[in-house]
Image 1: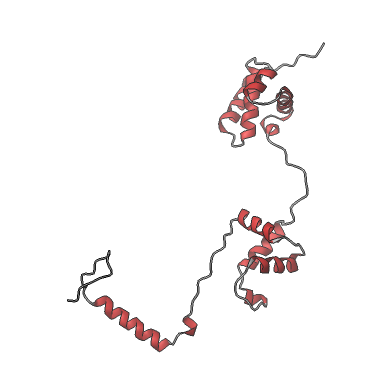
Image 2: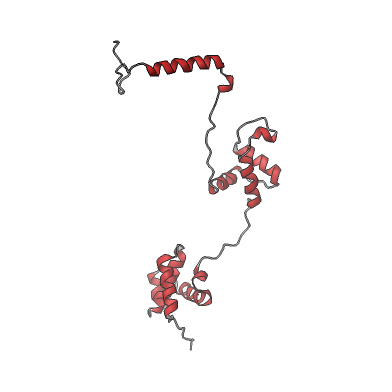
Length: 189
């Protein structure tokens, strides 16, 4: 005969499960804590599984995990696999690279493109990422691409610039000629 499992919780455990259901930000913990609470109320694992769209085996596994470690054991465990290439060192080099002018690093260009970043970071860290993967990491770390502002002040004649500025200041001082904002057609005074 199979050993009967006791699903009853102490008052302290009930409070802990209720707190998990009401306040835990992880949806899997809320769902699994709900299963533990329903088991405590006397529902069978098959019925709890139907209520939560899970198998009876899953419900029993959740209960076993709850008994071995409380709410924290109900959270998803890390998925095993290859560790990401872009680690904290890579991110640090990336951030310092993006904060610096390419000219200061010996390059002839003045704007970082994804291809240029990939090549530079590979030279600095020895880690090669594809352009797509670097794009994913940049997005994850909160970086967005923006067009550089073009400033041609260094190519302008300072005397002509001063003359235009004076002319604009004079125009601003003149009274409004009654221009209507919705039309470009005006009548001469």
